[in-house]
Length: 228
Image (cartoon, rainbow, N blue to C red; front, side, top):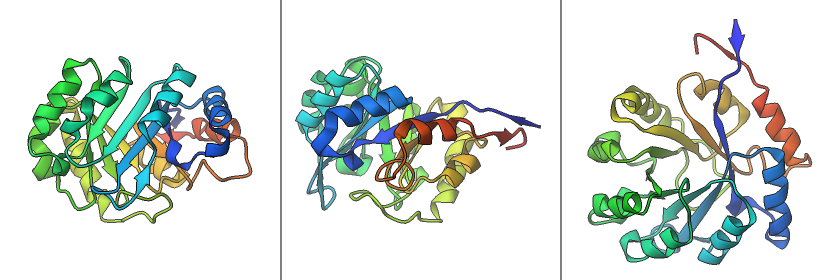
């Protein structure tokens, strides 16, 4: 027997066409995207620059959908207020624990501001290294590729990390999100296991010849076995 499962689809906006950003946001919004994933890179924590505070502010003004802000920056405590002030309740901020001396302090600022707190886990970061933080965050973004660039290949050893986190999520009260090299096969496999949402980039959504609404509709129509 098959049933339709509920899951979230997030658009990786660093992959969007910046010559037509307003249209991109409109088409994704109308096409049924659940939220907009904003990658902020400082050229230090990762060897790339991607998206700016102004990009974030424009997208925030152009849609009522939630924003999912992924800070790939060193010491986010130094600039976290800029991001908090640009967001609203229902939005999310992820930080990388390795990028901060005291990540719990930064997460508490996010919580106090009414923004959803999250952490992003790099491929080389173990679950044990972030276990205590799992009790205070609501979302865990698992990087299935090394952070910094779109279009990378999936790292198969990440499967073990998902297995560990799936065992902990209900006890500790967080949801798991997939980021990197996300194709339809990964959604088909991991929705039944309990992964809540998937960041869609060039593997499945952007740079294709299809309208966003058609791609998103096809993903929504997927059916999954009850056994998972």
